Amino acid sequence: MIKGKCYFCGADIELSDKIFQKDTCESCKRDLHSCVQCKFYDIRASNQCREPLSDFVRDKEKRNICGYFEFAGGGGTPGAVEDAKKKLDDLFKKK
Image: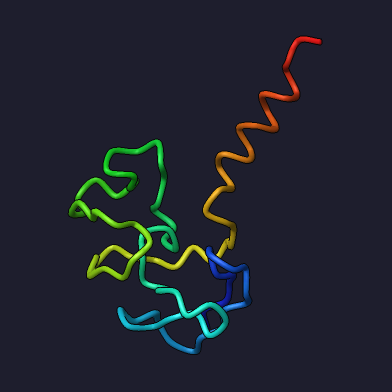
C-alpha cells in the first residue's frame, strides 16, 4: 500500500500498488512519477537527485522513466524550500 501526499497540491495519495509512469494525482492531475515526488529528489544534490546512478531529467515536475523512482509522499508546494530559507533568514536577521 502506498500512502502519502501530492507534492503539488497536498492531496492524500493512496494506491494499492506501485506508482506507474502515467499515474496522476486525482486532485490536481499532475504526474506522480516525477522527480519532485521522489524520495531521492534533493535540490542540493548533483542533478538534483541523491541517486548517483540516475540519468539526468530536465523537467523535474513532469513524468519520467527513472527506474530508481520511489514515491516520497511528503507533500509540499513548489516554493516550500524558498519559504523555509526566507523564514530562516528572517529568524537571524539583525534588528
